Length: 130
Image (cartoon, rainbow, N blue to C red; front, side):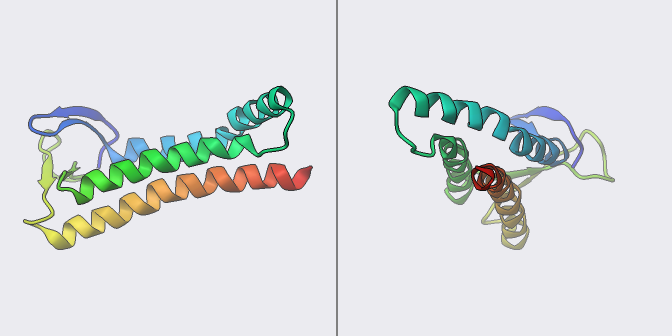
């Protein structure tokens, strides 16, 4: 679980969870500064009051669901052990280690779902301010 980016043979590029998690949280907090001008510009252009800013969390939710569907379809999780050999990665297959796979899957749901929830909450605070 080190914050690093590595290439894993047979899997592809792997980004450590300790790198993804803070990046997702920071990106979710800062996304409101992209969503609000995006929304204001599109509302001015289309002359409607549709909440276009919610398209950013919806798009992020689509990316998250695509990632989770790939995991359910058989793509393994790659785990970077924290205290073991720093150059060894573990591949967790759903069929071989089901308990561990589902724990990692729940962690993914919490991480990515929390980011979408945070983006939506920040937009809702902005909407309530108006």
